[in-house]
Image 1 (cartoon, rainbow, N blue to C red):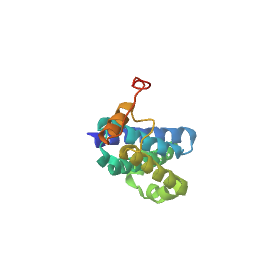
Image 2: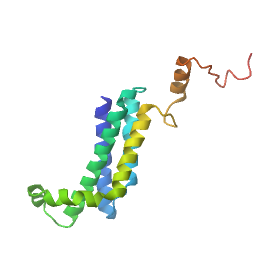
Image 3: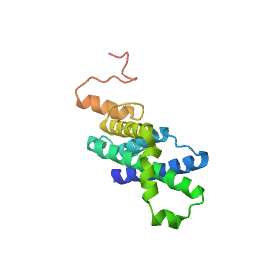
Image 4: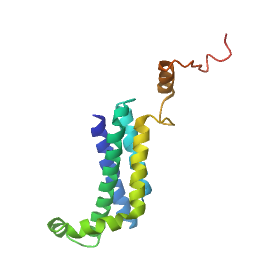
Length: 154
């Protein structure tokens, strides 16, 4: 269920990426990192603490980035009055232009998206984790946990 939720977020993020690129005529690679973060967070929300989702989360994040770049390319081609039938009939030009359209910076941001999605799901910590989850992990490790109510009492 968590992977399915991650795929849903990746597809939604790809659609947003495509529409933004179409509207401003520029691909914002920073959206890749946002997709990675969103995928990681929703998968961690559906199955909290399941570190086995880290690699699938990274893969889903990169797939969402690839789909976002492809959606941007297709929408921009449609904006140049290229009919859908031509695009569906011969995908060769889009496939050939894809690597140069994404560029090395785009691929770098895809890698960052994978890292962000992986780290969120691998439990690297941070603002997205609740205090209760952190306290539970510390208690399981045998660490003494002092909360605000425990401070100053003997």
